[in-house]
Image 1 (cartoon, rainbow, N blue to C red):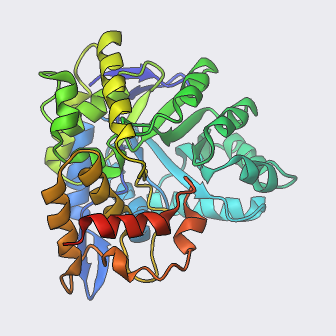
Image 2: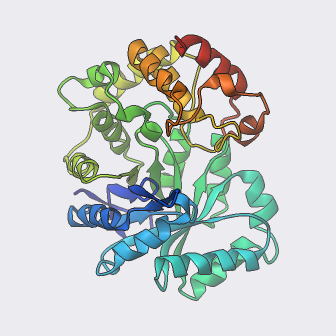
Amino acid sequence: MIYKEFGKTGIKVSALGFGAMRLPMIKKDGKDYVDEDKAVQIIHKAFELGVNYIDTAPYYCEHLSEAAVGKALKGWRDKVYVSTKNPIENASGDDWRRRLEKSLKNLDVDHIDFYHMWGINWKAYQDNIDVPNGPMAAAFKAKEEGLIKHISFSFHDAPENMLKIIDTGNFETVLCQYNLLDKSNEEGIAYAHEKGMGVVIMGPVGGGRLGAPSPVIQSMLKGKAKSTAEMALRFVLANPNVTIALSGMSSLQMVEENAAVASIPGTLTEEEIKRVEEMLEENRRLSDLYCTGCNYCMPCPQGLNIPHIFRLMNYNRVYGLKDYASDEYAKLKVEGNNTGKDASFCVECGGCESKCPQHLHIIEQLKQSHSALDR
């Protein structure tokens, strides 16, 4: 495993981080639960392979991820760094503190190493965070008390606003989106590194989109990667301004494969990166449909799985996997499927568009997707 200096924190972290947002689930009495035995086994395998950074959040895995991570930490707490998040629901520092205490209880730890203001934007920072008796003041107090070691933020906003949040000087690390299909935060990532911050990347495989086989992606660097997912992960790790690539792993195989990639010495050359970027730009011109797979548009009140539909549309238009995309879309018409309904069930309520951090025209894109994929 390759380790890197985590900004100015004085800590060395593994290039691969464990994202506990896709832990294996089981169904009991009609409800979804984390399969804790499998989850602990998978997390321990990651630790054994050198991963020393694990990230969770209060709402992951039906609100059960923190508790599962807490169980996996037994016997490992002094060897790994724990990251979780505080959803900024209002401008109250007291409410922020209550949410912190709940996470400490769920994780069954006496402190959290990296505690994030979760999914913030510049407006939220100004209106609800850095205000009198607000979350920022509460975070400083909690740090003084030793309940959290480092104050961090995760980011969903216009790329230029990341620079503003960094310039407040209140945060030590940042968690943001960056992958082969979305390089919009590249400048912010470089700026954060320049300012001495640790940089953690979420979605290195594009929310799963780059996990599917794609001859287009794999052909970018023949012989350099065995799979599309490996190519995507190597691209992120090749950025010298990135400290950790966070991967949501739900099987031992995924852990082993990702750990192997994060243990490859050296990086892609400038020429190789340029070749990849040129091919990506050409692919982007093939399609104006885009979705980061962040899932903020969910749940849909009509039962549509919007990110899944858009992922299939990208397979169709960007990668030319037309038969595969149509076959998968047809499964949405099968009664009782666990994926969701097809786009024909959209009633144009607009709820998804109001929640989309990318401000996509989701309703129109759902119509286009149905037209292209429905047989």
